[in-house]
Every structure is written in C-alpha cells, then in structure tokens.
Length: 166
Image (cartoon, rainbow, N blue to C red; front, top):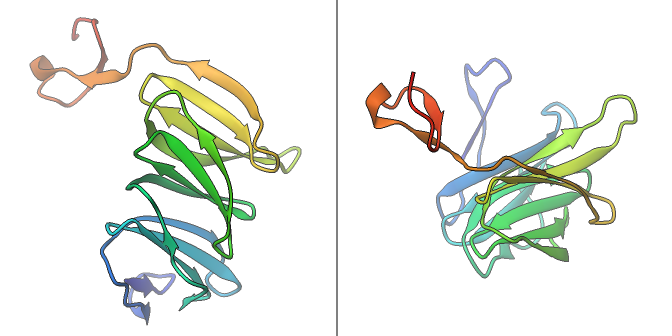
C-alpha cells in the first residue's frame, strides 16, 4: 500500500500487507497524528498509526462489506448482517445485528453540536442512524425499494424499481 504526498506527486510511505486491501478508513491529518484501518481480502483488518502497523491484526469471522471510523471506534459491516465495533487499538467493543445485509456505512457529523453518529445503509432500503458512544439506534429512514439500473436507458441513469424510464 502506498501513502501519497498531499499534492499526489510522490510516495511518502510504502506499507507491505499480507493481503490485498479492499476498504480504507482514515482519521486525522497526514502531518500530525493519523490512523488508517485497512480491511483486506483475507478477512483481516490492519491498523496503521502514523504510517506504522500498530497492534495485532483484527481477524474477522466473515468478509467485510463496509468500513468506517467514528471517534474512537472502527466499524466493520460484515456479510452476516452485523456491524462490529472495535476500539482503535483493535479490541472488540460490541456487535450490532441488522435486519438485512449491510450495503454501506458512513460517519455523520453534526456541526452545531459537534456530535458524530454512524449511518448504516441496508439492502432492504433502510438507512439507520446509531449513536457511536452508546450504540443506541436513533432513527430509521425507510426508502422503500432499492434503485435499479434500467437497461432501456443504457445503464446511465438510476430508475426506481417499477418506474418507467424517461
């Protein structure tokens, strides 16, 4: 894995991992303290602190499908419809069980309060919002059917399932 300079003209660090990376989650700044969580194809998450491997790798039971860092936790969406939370040092904190497979995850930042939360998108069309600090479910937004790509439009524009293309 290569870490590029801020202007992307050179390589500042080279890091050799035992497997191919599939997801990266980054926090901090390159010139200061930063951490990178790297999920690999061999169901392992490697933790890097300031460009150096820190602690032992996290061994997952199933393949990861999403990766996100919120405050002091690393969240891993897994193929078994769970979201596993780990501390930045690699110790497992808790597991959230989802009603449907995880599609994507992202951090939500509220600028007025400075609070952060975890957004989880599920295959059943739900978007769930979790409080990172105490793992409480704050809100569920149901989107209905998932968007699909219509073959009549050449695959360029998403069309909701059941809707006619323009």
